[in-house]
Amino acid sequence: MTLRDRINAVFGAETLPLLAFLALVFLAFSLATPLFLTGANLRSMAFQLPVLGLLTLAMLVPILSGGLNLAIIYQANISGLALAWVLIQFGGPDAGIGAFVLGAALAMLAGAASGAVMGAVVAYVGAHPILVSLAMMIFLQGLGEFLTRGGDISGFPDFMNVLGHGSLVGIPVPMIVFLLAAIVWHVMLKRTRHGFSVYMVGSNIRASEYSGLNTRRTLVMIYAISGIICAIAGIVMAARFNSVRVGHGEALLLVTVLACFLGGIDPFGGFGRVLPVVLALIILQALSSGLNLIGANQHLSVAVWGLFLIAVMALRRAGGWRRDRRRKGA
Image (cartoon, rainbow, N blue to C red; front, side, top):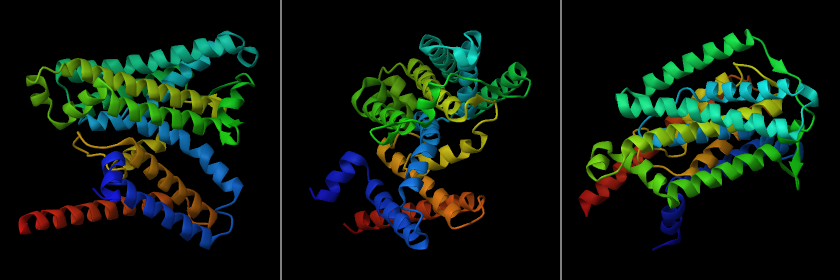
């Protein structure tokens, strides 16, 4: 087995092409502007990426199972509202660590509960995940608007700034949270029974049922865990923005799907790894930051992301066509 085959077996076939493209992006923007490789820009990227990264992890597992979670943004926001409500009850800016821990626990409970409800409807009713998550998205949006009357909730304790803007040994705290979550996701998918069940359900849910797998419990857990990671994203957003609003992060929904597909997640489920998705996130963030530094319109990055996705799908299709021809020739 060659070194490339070993890397593909451990990290996925998408890893090497994504690493090459990441190096190309960094080289191109470093030549285009001297500001790209500065510590300030890299630090800014490291602070911006984690929220999108956490939401992408929340989207990743439902897609692996052959579904989708369109409610991730509003699950994050409603979880942030739960945290904010507890902090306000305990004095807002004067709330202590205990209040924050209680609020974070309530936030995760809110995220897990909303996810479990979606998973239960998908598993026991048989409704399509897109429709179920869309209904949950609309419900949470309306509930959040009702609770906040369309405004913001702000006035949090100063120690929350550490979670949103602090650093540990030079690494932004939000990035540490994201990297820890990504490691946990990798271990869960590759080393646990639940991870094996996720891939089985995504590959063929009927065959999984016939093999004795409890697919209903697996689906409920998939969406509940997705809700928990949404809650963590909501907590980080609250610390980053020092406020909670129902509309925070609305533009990130489709970007999370884009990152999953760029990272090699099969849109029909059953195949994909965490590391290529993390690399895809870094590429998307580098493209956004680089285009901003060279003075491009901020909406141009979205167009570039779309073109990049089309190019990746075309290359992937061409690679599959070549492999098929080789097999036929053999």
